[in-house]
Length: 216
Ligand SMILES: Nc1nc2c(ncn2[C@@H]2O[C@H](COP(=O)(O)OP(=O)(O)OP(=O)(O)O)[C@@H](O)[C@H]2O)c(=O)[nH]1
Ligand SMILES: [Mg+2]
Image 1 (tube, helix red, strand yellow):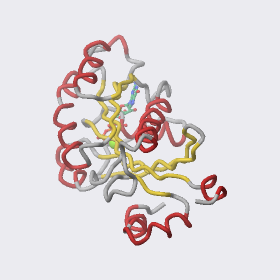
Image 2 (tube, rainbow, N blue to C red):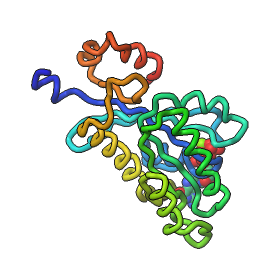
Image 3 (cartoon, rainbow, N blue to C red):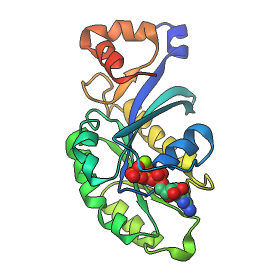
């Protein structure tokens, strides 16, 4: 790689936002992209958003797929899991039911996306502490046992929302740099974003994938 190519090159990471209905997945996405938590209806199937961020001096485009939590969309949403590099696994701290469902979501993510998928657990609606049904300690133990990062977030106030996405992206980047993750592996959920670089990688099929996955 020439110096210039390296400087302008960026990665593209495919991210999922998963978890039970009403936990605030769409609000997390809107807060991250537009700095607001719009009143949102249940997501039908999948919504899409993207944002370019700077992670440890590198430009990374996050391509984020916000999935519907409702059971009736499960078969549709599952078809979007493949090849995701990272995920926000969301529950609502005021709803034990959404916390109890985490194991199922986790199994889906690891089997359908990738066993190497980097996941951050988000205990959302942190602002509703008075109605809390799940303690911070309990969730952090669950996260530790399941090798997840963990943050409590508020898509309403914006607290820790940016941190959640960036923490996940930073971990993926660290794993690329340490060689633990190979961006060239098919279905890694990672692409080289720079057009010239992409051309170089074309024989391995990443350009075709980009076209298919990215309608941004
Ligand atoms: N107080 C509070 N309310 C929130 C927060 N995040 C989301 N909400 C509210 O919770 C409700 C559900 O939010 P959504 O973002 O639509 O939930 P979702 O997870 O996308 O739901 P599905 O698309 O059905 O899976 C909305 O009324 C939001 O305004 C938060 O951090 N705090
Ligand atoms: Mg939604």
